[in-house]
Length: 368
Image 1 (cartoon, rainbow, N blue to C red):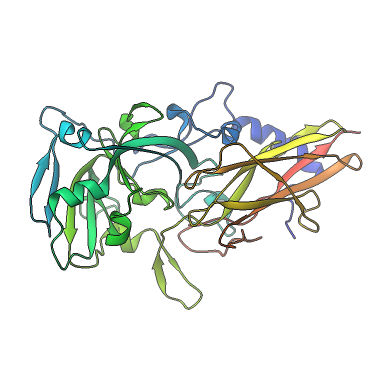
Image 2: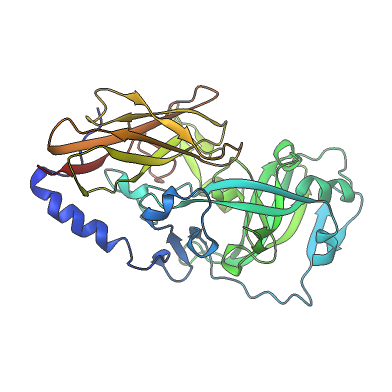
């Protein structure tokens, strides 16, 4: 069962709150200014592509200042040819383009009870863009990977102190060699056909298809091939989750998930057939089906998948719902991917507030 998060007496309040989180002009819903953190407005979660200014932002440190005349991308470690690549060196490589959905690992953190520390995202820390750039594989192959290499370490130009009183550090993340060498892993310099915006990592960022956004390092300044398992702060202290056996695991691929983008929570609907629409995605495979419920999960029916269908992008869905009568309804949706991964009814609570992919109710009222 999916339980309603409001009561019939509280519907008016829900409408007011929803309006407050939905600006009259489409702007990023700002959570913090420094570092910049914001989520995509709820009405935009029904667009297959997210406009660059409305693509969610989750930065860990302040935006670095980049001087392109002296900017270089270092490539070192277990490679045959150490390199200092300029922007033209990257752009002369074959250009790869892919539509990719990115989701912050802390998306929907505000849904958890009891609450957990961290940015209290609602459901807008997920967005989709057409990314273009060089395949990371091409950069690594040009450098020549030496025997014994196990991971590739990526450094961003942003730095700061993630823990008050702690040491200053750059944003560092690593990938297993097989992920780094996958032909679809990108070093991107374009976003939706435009130059990569500064808040999204200009001039270069890593884009790791299927993985939560923390893996896609922005303001990429260094690539290092290493012969060990990296255990840096943003790899093993943050973005980890405790499994059922009490073992802490690093967060990787996005879990199967879906949302209702229309109607909005708290909305009052006319008593007539209504189009219900939303999005679904999974980092492990394309979406196979989406189910819809209008009775809090007691019964489910198949929705219709619509729009483009691409390996790394979310899937649009819709259906026509005819309310049987006026009253208060708890709408819900759940997705299944092509590997059989089913979105859970309830998120397994965790102290970091990560991977919140449980079914999220949308409460509406049908007018008499």
